[in-house]
Length: 474
Ligand SMILES: Cc1cc2nc3c(=O)[nH]c(=O)nc-3n(C[C@H](O)[C@H](O)[C@H](O)COP(=O)(O)OP(=O)(O)OC[C@H]3O[C@@H](n4cnc5c(N)ncnc54)[C@H](O)[C@@H]3O)c2cc1C
Image (cartoon, rainbow, N blue to C red):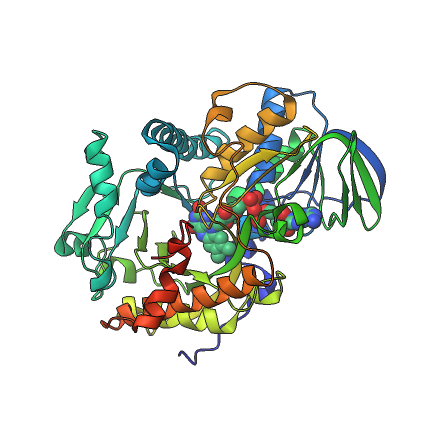
């Protein structure tokens, strides 16, 4: 375990601090809600899902009165903390075909691909520099056990006649693109982009404020009344609205309605100091993101000033019944990320680590997001991105905006709409079971990193979620 002290980043991600230091991303201050107000549509949550929903609402009906309530600041949650990988659904094609059938899976992947492009267009049309680079992505095997993990995907694309969308790479070809002693083969895809996630979140916020969306920050919704109108209470005010959209990611586990539909894990990132000469030394030139095929995957990308941002997903510091401070910063998980960064790129061992942070992940049993509407017809929700929401939340915004306005669009016919993922067991089994399985998965990954097999009990427990019908784990 590393002994390098990592600055806790003041409760914010490095991305968000970078963005907030620039006036165009800091934007105008937003008030907290003080008093009673009403709106046509209330949005709870100022991450990408809530903000894309507001944006599509205004696209569909510029006159609609939208209030957005955020407990922190917009982008203070995972939308300003993530790795910045803008992905479509293609890498999950095989599982999507199993869940929804070939045609529905293909429609979803094509629509997700469109979102990746549309996010780039949103930024470029407004001249916003959010470091968007549509260079595709690369999945690598970082241990022998991961070699061929892409076989099911390749077979699925071949069966569907779209085998040209992915390219399997030999170890030498991977190392031409990024040279690490632990990388074996891999698979490259032209889809996917990288972005500075907090610059994206903060520019969305600015565009929304300019278009008349009323944003209240530091305004946590502590009570929510379903009815007509819906009624949200914050510590110093209330909002009544004809309809509402709940875009609250992992915090949804605190809502009775959702607490068996998601379980919460943490993802953590460290960022190095600038070392502009170093990426070229390891053949890293393009902007594409890389990730490996561990269950608790590593994801890594560069920044324009020559840093590496290195993340590790699938971590769980505690029972995760509450999203506490360890989801924003967990020294153990940050230490693991530093050690793994240095194992992957030994030449970065002498580059200081400048920041480390984390955030909660809303894991759904199907490993896919889901969107739905309460029985009353006027409360809509979207969550369960399972650590892959940067691209898909744009689609989520389209779905939720159309739902809130009662307007038809083909996105409402996608298979993620009005499905409920497999339910997790009730408490206390949900959180205890998730923690036990998670630790077995981490031990199994670690054994593979070290070139050994996991012991049979660890392997058995790690595989339990999938044996129980969840699309999670090995
Ligand atoms: C470290 C990390 C790395 C990641 N990397 C990637 C990646 O590279 N690519 C990718 O696709 N995805 C990644 N993800 C996941 C991605 O960030 C999320 O899927 C995405 O941001 C979800 O957006 P959202 O708007 O649904 O949620 P959020 O961004 O979490 O927004 C929800 C908001 O709701 C607010 N809220 C909650 N409850 C209340 C309440 N009661 N009242 C008011 N406000 C409330 C929260 O404060 C929060 O700001 C990562 C996540 C983390 C944590």
